[in-house]
Image (tube, rainbow, N blue to C red; front, side, top):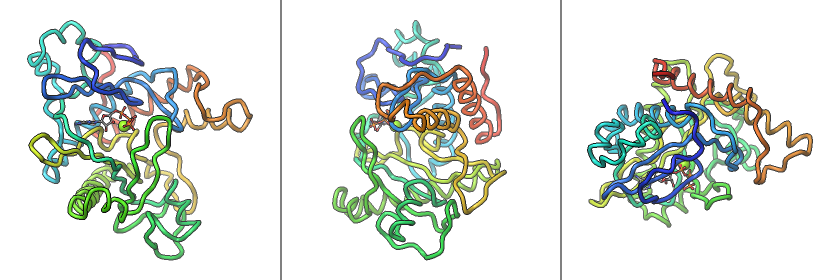
Length: 307
Ligand SMILES: Nc1ncnc2c1ncn2[C@@H]1O[C@H](COP(=O)(O)OP(=O)(O)OP(=O)(O)O)[C@@H](O)[C@H]1O
Ligand SMILES: [Mg+2]
């Protein structure tokens, strides 16, 4: 089992690199490799979080299997042997990428983050408090912070360039960028996916407060669900136990990192801009444990951490 890695650096042509994932070209397809990097306030921290890449990859795989009747997705395989049979030289570096990698179909991603919110919190709560709206649409009066929204609401955002924060946009804006038909399709699929996931997560005592989906068009012109899905990095999870509308909730996974960094910001030691401050070992450890716990709560079984 490989140790925590900030970079994977496989001997394949790099297609692109994001805050967390390295995407490599593998023939007509992509090898999507999740590193153990963690970002907070859109800044990538220096310390890798043990098991994080594998947790993200395996949680996504679990959800892709449970949602493909709603929409086709980009996954070809996560099995190391199948990936090696496609590209035998990868056998040598297997330990670095196994478990954290997904062979996926290459797409042209839509330039919109398809956010769905089933509980009002974060930037949505801010918008509602300021103007009584969400994604520019009016909401009923009298909602309280963290209240459940029925039906859940599609609240799209732009895909911001590196170092910038995603920005909430109206559905009208999505329609003007993607055209009405595609915009409606992405919205309807996103809401269905969220509803499916919200119900499944609740069975395990987890509230899926909100989440973000990405979609792309395959070479054959098919709309596919891409990227990671319904992971702690792309979603807000809260524990059912302790949930109380009327106040903000502890987010399950990155909370130790956020609390630690918030304290530094309050002390005037850090201003949320790169370079990030170092994370103490105990913050790294407790964050790693929370990612593993998230896997267990969502899927109902533990992720093996030694072999
Ligand atoms: N099947 C796919 N085809 C093409 N691009 C994909 C596919 N799946 C995911 N991607 C893209 O690969 C990148 C994954 O990397 P990562 O999630 O680390 O980036 P990020 O920092 O969130 O992204 P970005 O920099 O785009 O905001 C994202 O830009 C995502 O849109
Ligand atoms: Mg991403």
